Image (tube, rainbow, N blue to C red; front, side, top):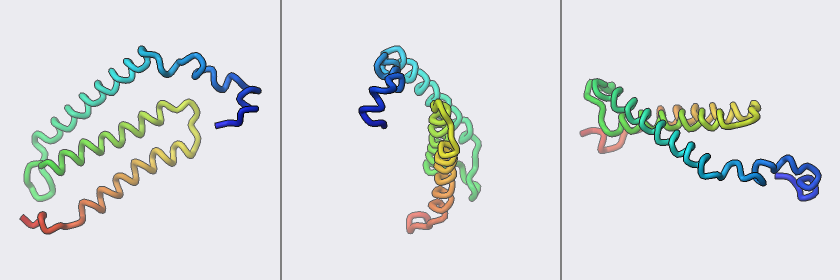
Amino acid sequence: DVSASLSKKYPQLYKEGIRNMYFKWRVIAIWAFFSFFQSLILYNFSMAASQKGLNASGKILGLWDLSTMAFTCVVVTVNLRLLMACDLLTRWHHISVFGSILAWFIFIFLYSGIMTPFDRQ
């Protein structure tokens, strides 16, 4: 975000917005198509990986395992897609994207180690 005087001095900063490049129906349709396509890939990957998968106790994968695997795919895909959408990549972009992915893996590692009374069944 820049001041009004700078935006008047450098109008090329806003040429994409002035030309309405990001909000055309064609662009929205392409993004919707790719999001649908990526969701199909993630769904099929999760289903194929869970068909003969076993968890640590030797049981077939349940709702917790499948949803964790699917959400992990979503976290990685969204963060990498965000990185690919950036025009200029700095170290802060890399730190935030890969830090977010790492934070998810740390969280799920710690959260899966917490036992509740319902886990003993």
